[in-house]
Image (cartoon, rainbow, N blue to C red; front, side):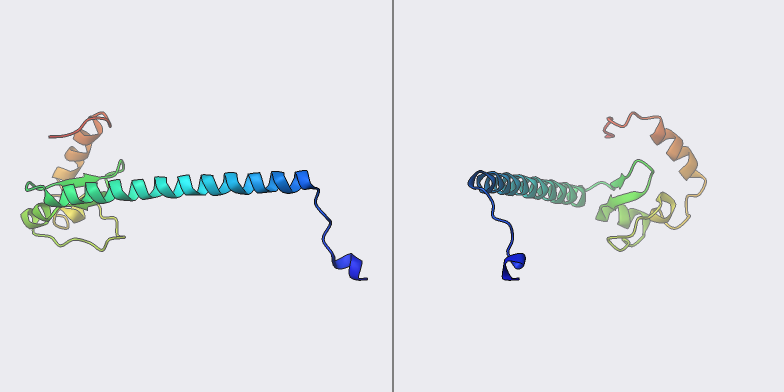
Length: 120
């Protein structure tokens, strides 16, 4: 009965293959963690740049959801920043409907710009 509880014995070449696979997985995990850290660093740097620009700046997603805005934007439109996880619409970011007629025209304009274009 004691023999039934023992795991089957692995051959030396199977053990070597498993060790090699574990090493490959550890290397892949390390590379992924480095990549994630690089992305976090780039995101933090971009966030700092947005926050330090003196002109009002609004960063939007492709579907026109507010990703971030700088203090100059909030001051100009006299609005407060939303909670970090909240995704505001343009109209709510620009004063909760103060500019309702401007938004559709502005969206059409933005859609006409190729996505690789940087606005200045």
